[in-house]
Length: 307
DNA sequence: GTCGAGGTTAATGCAC
DNA sequence: GTGCATTAACCTCGAC
Image (cartoon, rainbow, N blue to C red; front, side, top):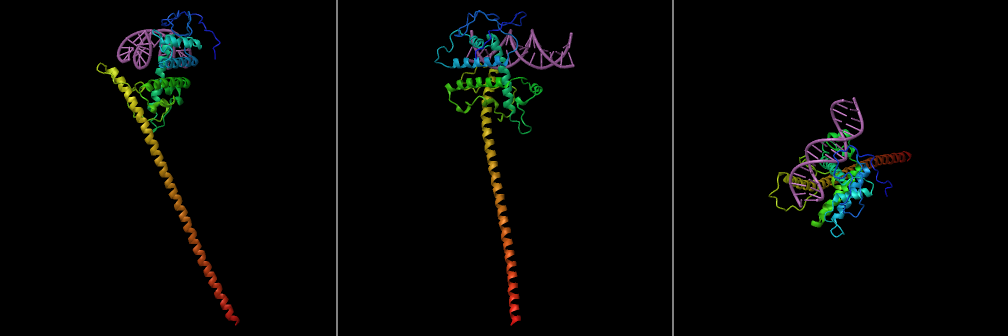
């Protein structure tokens, strides 16, 4: 578990690209209880999946840490959230700065939401042609749909987990709505939902916002749009659950009807067979009687001849 | 100040 | 070398 490698110092931090605040940070502002390095050389370049997963874990732990009201330090005054995450990452072999973590998180969320949006909104199109899941798409197909081309399932799952936990912890204190506290995979990936082509290639409904009794006089159109989106997504989710239930109900009804028809058909067949057997029995009986009477008659005739 | 969302830019790698 | 795709990083805005 422990990372054997020390922070790999990049050989040279020559040509920079818009370097964030802290290429080498004294970390004097670190308010976490974790590692506080005197100076750090942050890794550049693309994020590996392992780094990404570490970041996601850090984010989840940070959310949990902050969600607990009673714990020692939910958020110390002045504490920089992303500094805590940076420290966690640093302790787990991901040598990135807080800004890098923040940016990466933003970009991850964008991709995640695109995929989730696609999965949930297109899943219903089974009527005409089968829904092509993001995960079974080719690269170029993903591109066609303006989706990230290489989101890995592990990362998606991990993000999903974090967002679900967050959503649940946000909802629980206010109102207990067990209906949507499902397991991580459920919400976005149950692709059989029924989103009625609602429109708007907008970003995803993050959460079904519950506390919105605030005054909305000063909200500009953008804010309104966001709220409408949230409400819309809540309605969509409810509608999809309802549609799912109705659909399965309808399917069960149809199945039962088919079973009844099948039974009826079988009963008729049996009836017919029985009739056939009866008819044949009677015919045989008549033939036997005829034979018998013929035999009796010839017997009588013989008797008279002898006398 | 923090956070999320969204737009944008710059660096990088790859194919031709 | 050029064009394109990808992605890290920057920037702005609004909400809290």
